[in-house]
Length: 314
Image: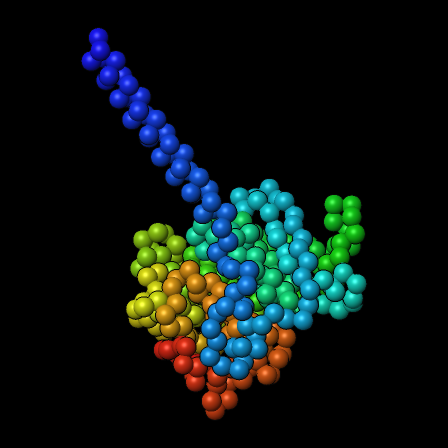
């Protein structure tokens, strides 16, 4: 009898240990899931290697306000970050649509969206978990069109009414979201609305095909910048050779660069000085920003923090 009791006590102890381990792991996973993928102060901590990169890595002059709208879609809601003065001033604002990486909804990298908004952009994204096909980006465009055309939304005054510059919409995405960028501007109904694009560490073609995230960069006719990291060797989602392969598929109007010693997750925000400059040039006509990519000696070609730079612009 004593032996049976000892066995039962031992079993209870094992069960209790497993319960504690499970509870602990669950708590850790929950904590990780709540952690942001972009630090709130990344503009102050990321190293920069050029004057233009430094200028556009800084926060812009605008205060930023958030707007959310729940929606009956798999991506749950639209989130918009916009310059606070939009509510009081006339005029239109250019747009950046964001495509999410795997496990990284917009709510986990809001500092990136806020950064762009501080430079005068309306920035829109979703909580989409599978952004590879560009569908959420397409729906963002349709929602923007609705906002721009409707004086009221849900029986309330719509502050975005006729303030969205539909002729100047850009799109950016990281990892799986980089694939989403390519598909949004090559396969979706409103693909021609996008004026500029950035694909950050887009999933390589072989891995994307294995995951059935197919894309065809040879169909691109939107000016696009490809960025990845060289995190102590290579970005495991897209190596230097694989990024070059995507670059070579694109007919023209393209830029490629790889940031040295930058891990895959860090590329989401680490090159945002140049991402901001790219959109400032393409969507706001900022010629100072353009000099990062154009002229006899573009800054990206001289910046020692980057490598494998290629430029083919019309």
